[in-house]
Length: 223
Image (cartoon, rainbow, N blue to C red; front, top):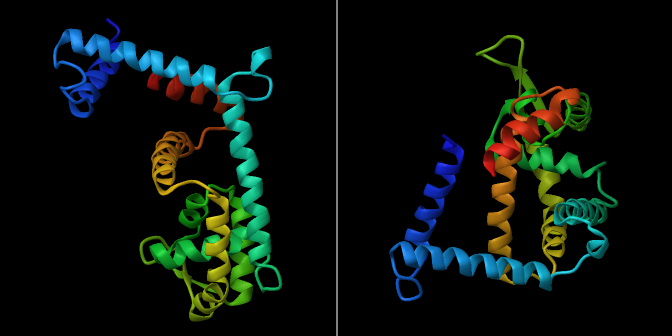
């Protein structure tokens, strides 16, 4: 028995029951089938309405999404570089590490690095650079003597506050001309996508196995 299919059907019924107005579709099997049909037509219409480079040659939507995410990340980095221009900050990651420490409080080096989705060697370089600036400090962990607890200093908070205005402006530029409703919708979609990838990232899968495990154990089982 295909339990995954059963789960998907149940999820679909739950969505139908909670989101669909009885005025548009009757709350029975006929209404449920009609709702599915209407959704499929709407999806097909949107797909045909949208266009992207290479679509006519078979370029899949997933490829376009990946490209756009990469582009947006690069745009965001250029605005971040402008925000920290002529400041004591070296990279975008410097102030992101400080923002996380200020927002979430003290944590271990490993926790801080993982929160920023970075490899340990790169994360350690950033942490050492911030320690050198006097913006963060480290102390022994009471729970694990092998770990160091990192916290932001008063000097770090001051440095962060000096450029926070420009950082906020950079963030606003990244979201561009989206309406408030579009921003809310985008947050919902990106949070769903982030939760999917976080589950994979938390497994610390070796590079030679990552694609295989992510595709078979996570992607296929969630579709």
